Image (cartoon, rainbow, N blue to C red):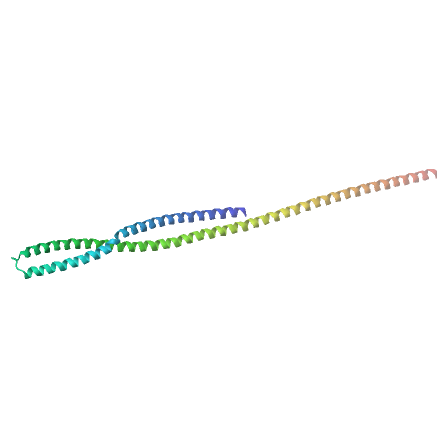
Length: 226
């Protein structure tokens, strides 16, 4: 009935509002996670050079250490009075300083690479969460569509049922009105016939009374003559 339709509509509306709110919150959370992923990707892009720079610096360190070791070997073999001795010592000091600086850079670059790896793990986790959220979003949208279609079908069926009931009520009312009209007509016919019968009986009684009175008068006259 109409009351059930109103209750069903209210229930559907409340469910739709709840799902819409859930979908809105999900979209907001997805947008935040997606922006975080983009920020990390942009940061990682800046770190990409660290891989190649680290390898280059490590190769440079190995080359410099080899050069330093060769010079130190020459220092051990040559006498300190050799004119080139001091020059080699100065060169070794410069090489050691450069090696120290490069090792510090390598440590920094290794730290950046570790951070990049952590970021990649974060991206993988966030992407997994986004994938799950997208699946949930698809599920919610499908549920909203299914419930809307289900309610639309129920409403159409309910309206058809109510229309059928109204038509049946109208037919019953029409039939009842016809029966009442027929009954009234029959009552009128019966009343008229009763009235006619009463009138006939009255006329018959009056005729009989007249005949009876006439007979009485004749009898009275006969007795007087005798």
